[in-house]
Image (cartoon, rainbow, N blue to C red; front, side, top):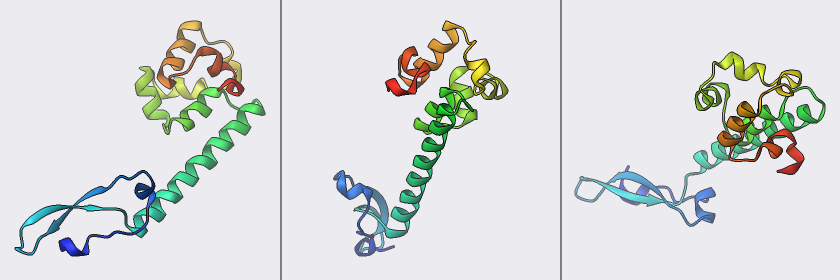
Length: 134
């Protein structure tokens, strides 16, 4: 795209006074960089993704309150992780992390394991055990 055609639509970047760096072709036909404040299709996709994340967080929170999952799943969603990512941070097999989602298993985790999860989520063990304390 030409430098003059770089999109300058409203976006989430605009409110934070950030600009996205894009490649464009200048008047001499050479590649150059240009700043963009946003692009409508990208903004729509990003907003949809953010809404999806918020819904998953709320769903996980309800499941914790209904004792259907552990706070680990809630904090995993809050930190925009999935099981493979969380498992890699924890140095555990994915099946073990999924097992820790069970409230009965979570309640029996050692202080060492709770501490490791708390460290990964950058919270205290108390916050990990009670999401109302966040």
